[in-house]
Length: 215
Length: 304
Image 1 (tube, one colour):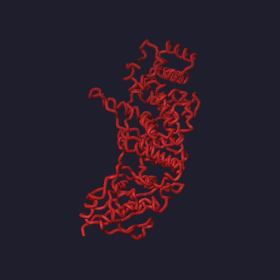
Image 2: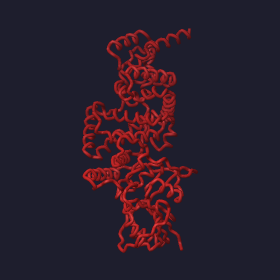
Image 3: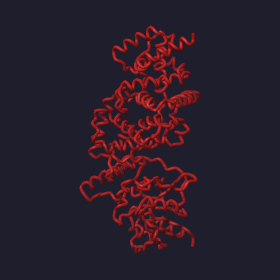
Image 4: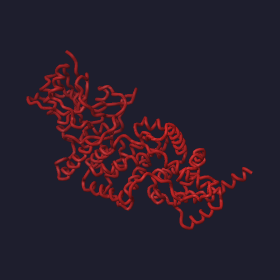
């Protein structure tokens, strides 16, 4: 959509990968939590497997280090297991888990030093870039776009980057972000705007490419 | 002229930017939403700004998520089990939580109380999970055994290192007739404190032709006696302080011994350095009775 496009901007966010009904997810979490609390370790293993990639991916984007992301994620799962009987289930398990992970990282005085290059990520033995099934030129374009995006994200202030990751990569709403970061919703809104405004400046060439894409 | 446009854009951004950003997220109140939509309909710059915010959102959300190769589940369960057994609970925050195997007698209070039996059940389940899930291999070059053994003895107080020398023929015979790889090539929990102090330990298959290797024996001194009886080699035991200990009497009975090879890795060009010990003094394993002390066999094979 461009300036000349007569259509008003839509308020619908871009679609994400289908994740099933939220109620189903929550019911599955609840069953696994119940079984874990009853002493079924395999059930907690299932919980770990449900969320490990998502948590590591998010921590990777926040910290910029695959190794740090891995360490914090492991410790967060351990702490969540040990504290599972205190989980009130008023929030989603993942929201609770992420909050533990976030607090762990902060309590360890980890300084965010984003190093979001594919090279560093691969050297750390963690994630690999997902394969693309598009044309031969597409991976190069995607890689360049991805590199530019990562480079821009790492220029954000820590608190702006955290909010952006939770919103754009975790798909959390403002209320959830507010709970995870323990800041007012107004602060979430303000930080997200600042983050986007900075990214808008940094990514202006790419925004032209996306102007015609459906959202 | 351009300066005027930039000023107007800056003013728009300052006045409406936060609401336009929240509009893209559908996070406005009904009143705010009405106001923003009216602005977008009448102001091309505002519409452009909203589109840019949506473009940023699209860029982020179209970025492929990273793919991780290793599974955390087994390490998480084993570490949670260790912390529970250790009584350290949720208060402890130790980031070195790589997978460790609960196998054999590793000093946990199994069977000593009803709670201990509960932990035994949990451990069995964890062991099953550990057997199913994979692990990420350790990295870095293998450190010299002398250096690795010294570091392990510092990191695991009470660790018994039994030196065993054999000819190639003797060792091959013992290897073929007396040894079998442990069912799961996982690091023994008995060596957890070494791992926690920063040693990069890796579990592997015992080697038939290695000139020197470290083997973990889950069955303790009885298995050493079995091996010694079968090998008829030169044996002497080294205590935690490095001093010699009288060897035990040879055992007549022989049986297959499940062993795990312990490989210690380090950083290229750097000596092994240990992290400071945990404030609580380490794992319960190292505080167990002398008979339960973990044993690592150091096997040297050389022609005579």
